Picture 1 (spheres, rainbow, N blue to C red):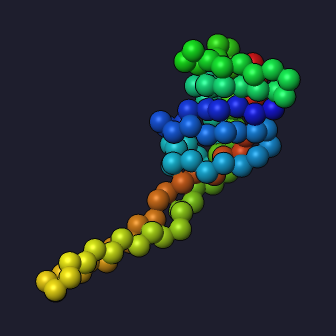
Picture 2: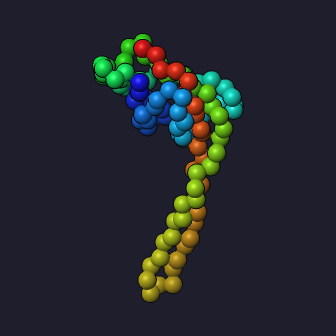
Length: 103
């Protein structure tokens, strides 16, 4: 069984007892979260597509930890002008464990 869920403006495919990384969510480590913006839910035999959301469906999970993503290097250069800039960025993420998908 899997579902497509809208979390913080992005769509994720989630399955029970699997981990996903999302943009940083507010909440403490170990707290429970529920998402009711379920766009699609499928159990293998039947698929239910929401218009825009599936009524009565929700996904519950648990926040495991807040982590940082790998560093992304941003390098800008203009040739023959003596201009170059180097910056780095690490996006903050939340690791979620999906506990239950219910219709």
